[in-house]
Amino acid sequence: MAVEYDSDYKPVAIKTIIISSQTKPGKLEEAKALLLEAIGGYIKKYPECQVLINPTGAFETGGPCADSGLAGRKLMCDTYGGVAHHGGGAFSGKDPTKVDRSGAYYCRYVAKALVDSGLCKRCEVGVAYSIGIAEPVSVSVDSFRTGVIEDDRLVELVKEVFDFKPASIIKELKLLDVTYSRISEYGHFGRLGLNLPWEDTDAKAQALREALEKA
Image 1 (cartoon, rainbow, N blue to C red):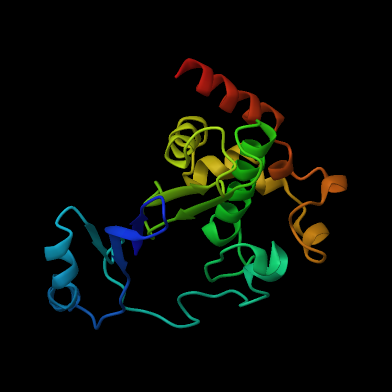
Image 2 (image 1 turned 90 degrees about the horizontal axis):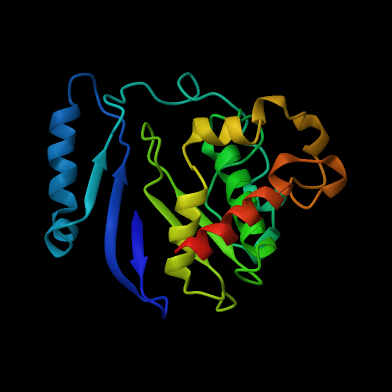
């Protein structure tokens, strides 16, 4: 669920609802009807809300035979600890096509570029995806009131300069060429001696400054 908040961090609207539900063979449409009924109150209250139910189609096979991979250490263990907001997932056992890994790297890349550009002194970048849809359903920036412009404007600049589609992230950060064994311990961020692509933000920081000047 993607929720819109006002400047005081109070929820004001639901923008997107995503449901991925395993069903019996041939029962997808029946399941959709039941799920739409269950969330009808939200749809009525927020008529502009986008609802995505099994956007890739039928989900009839679940469990380890359909979604293999290690559970691994959770994201907060390999990233920022408890200082940042986290979703679920893990880097371990995931290739770069999984946004658990590539999306987290890109958020780091974006946040570091924003700080390096001088547009804020501190920030947290959030992104949310729906399975089967390349564009994220939500991109957010929280500068903790350290930004030289409003956070909504920072989001606009970020969307102008950065491409959050997984295939684009993989290409831009050259994630197929990264030796992941080097970062399997001691964390994935702040490892400046390893020359990791999501730490090299000079070009993007300049692009952000130029985008602001043109606005």
